[in-house]
Length: 171
Image (cartoon, rainbow, N blue to C red; front, side):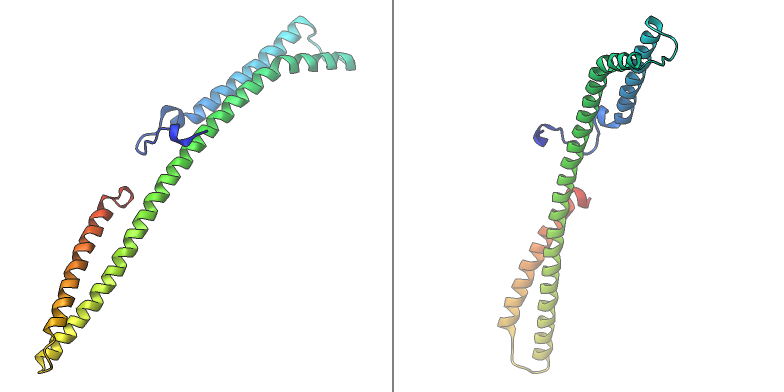
C-alpha cells in the first residue's frame, strides 16, 4: 500500500477515520445478525431441539461453517483493510511531524550556535573598546572586522528566526 496515494490533510480527518469505530461496529452487527439468521434457519427447518447424536452435530457444524465462513471471512478482510488504511495514514502523519520537528531542531541548533558566536564577538568587541579607551593600541581594524562579522551573523540569525516562525510545527 503506497502512502503517496493517501490524502495528507493534517487539519481534517476523513469521514472513514472519524467513524472507524462506528464502521467496525456495523461490521460486527452484520456478523451477529448473520449468525442469528443462519442458526434460526437451521433450527426452523431441521430441528428445534439439541440432538444427542454426533452425526447431527457434524451436519450442523458443516452447515454453519459452509454458510457463515465466507461471510465472516469477508467482513474480517474489510475490517483488516480499514485498520491498515488508518495505520498508513497515521504513519504518514507521524513521518511529516517528525520531518517538521527535525527541521525545527536543526534551526534551533543553528540559532544556538550563532548566538554563542555573537556573544563571543560582543565580548571581544567590548574588550577591544576597553583596551582602546584605557590608552591601549588602537584596535579599530580588528574591531571593524568583528563588527562586520557581527552584522552578518545578526542577518543570518534573523533569517533563521523567520524560517522558524514559518515552520508549521513551530507556530
